[in-house]
Amino acid sequence: MSPKPATAEVKAKLIDAAIRLLSDGGPEALQARKLAAEIGASTMAVYTHFGGMGALVDEVAREGFRRLSANLGEIEDTGDPAADMLTLALTYRRTVVDNPQLYAVTFGQSQPSGQKAALGDMTNEETRQNLSEEGIEAFGFLVRGAKRVIDAGRFRPASEFDVAAQLWSAVHGYITLEVAGHFGDGENGVDQILVPLATALGVGLGDTLEAATRSARISIESWRAKEGNIGT
Image (cartoon, rainbow, N blue to C red; front, side, top):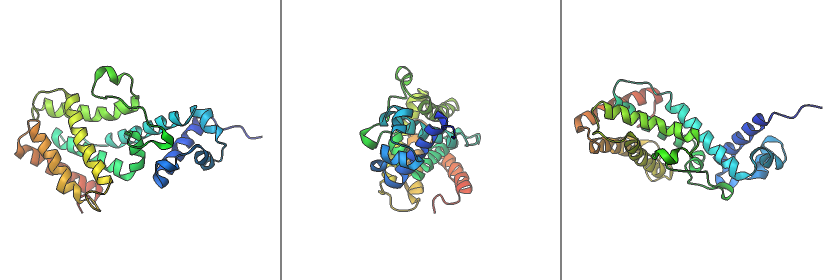
């Protein structure tokens, strides 16, 4: 008789299966019965390993943040903190656009099986204590990026948490509209909307138009070289 798979292995399989179901069928497809069928188990596996669909949805959201952090962590420091900040935005966008259903759950925009991932204010030191480590880590890339730009004198002195939240709001708003199809097919919205939006926000935060434009050009050119299709 073969041994039962370890709990961690089954949980990982259920999370991967949940992400596949979301990608293929949206939030309506994320059901305990379908999850169990995906890994060849009974529906009790969901309740045994997570206690219910609510906890599984929270774990899916944590996995979304882990994947986002992994991508943001690959960005190299160019020495231009404002350019690097835009590259964070471009990487954030690419991650979400590649798997919009996962990130709709991660950011609480969809509620599979009527369950919404636990959320909170990442910009407040007190409420941050109640949030997942994965969410805090992902937001931390924006916070550290904002601090670099502030410390370089490109932005006015301000809380890096507040600046990061403003940048996050602008970029995530753009991504939400793009995913919904409001900017047409392809990635022309990056050049026509996202980069000018980031440039205007940088100027509003204290950068000069000349410096912000130069940094945007550095970022988008390096991004095109890496991705090969941004703006085409």
